[in-house]
Image (cartoon, rainbow, N blue to C red; front, top):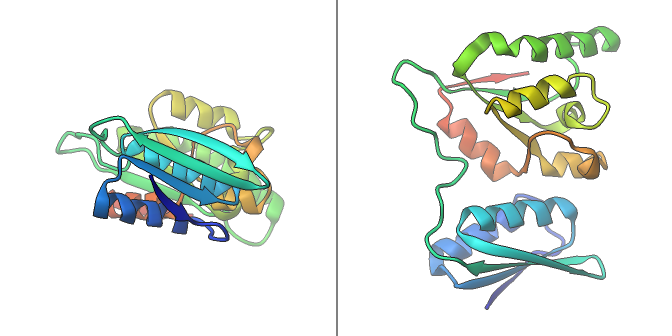
Length: 198
């Protein structure tokens, strides 16, 4: 079994090291040691997307994420889905829990209204990505949460930065979207036809 020690590394470094090992050697079994929840989630998800069966053990604050090959890797969630030629892939990057500057209460209300109105974009809305304080919009009790959950049920992919959730101590409170890492976010930026940054 190949072992990678990623203790002390913040995401996306553990995912990038696992990616490099898989691309170089495609081991049948891989163990990645990490020491934070965001890295545990991101490495686990990455290994699953690469075709590995994943198990995790924890001892003394160290998570050992073990991937065992289960055959041909499935298509990555980062790859674009087949789209009609006339449809765009618009990604919205939400970097704050409020919109604009000046009055925080007004900004929070504007952001909620913006998220509620996104459905007007129709099928062109491809990904919704939350980073920095934007992740606060995905947790229990957040005003736009029911709308975001409805979007997800309807098939919109929502990505939520795991490092950001960990920074704000919100990993356990996230209620919508897929906990992700900077590698997935950068890949989504590359695949998008247009990116709207808030």
